[in-house]
Every structure is written in structure tokens, then in C-alpha cells.
Image (cartoon, rainbow, N blue to C red; front, side):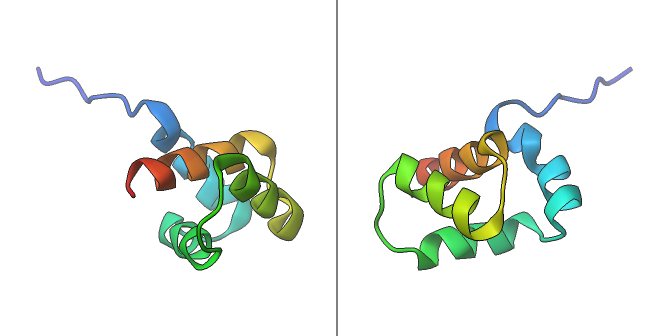
Length: 69
């Protein structure tokens, strides 16, 4: 019987981020891209300040975004 692979790392937060903030992950990737070149914590603070996002969710999105750059 095949086992479903558990999502690990920043992507494991994606379902709860989409549910809590009502936007798909693609929206947040575009938001981060539009912010321009910034450091990790600058991007985290932007999401927290401008979008009232919690630290853990913001950190997960930024880590994922920067890993894909």
C-alpha cells in the first residue's frame, strides 16, 4: 500500500496560510517578488506589518520564496 509523502519544511504551512489569509500561495509569492530585493527578515517584517501575518507563516513564505530565487 503506497504511503502519502508528508510535506515538510516551509510548504507544510501552506494549507493553513491559505485558509487563514484567504489568498493562494501564488499571491504571496507575487507580493514578495513585488517588494523588490530585500533581506529575509525585511520580507518577514513586511508581511507582518502590511498584511497582519503571524511570524511563523511569514517566515515560512519568505524561506520558500528565497529558496526558489
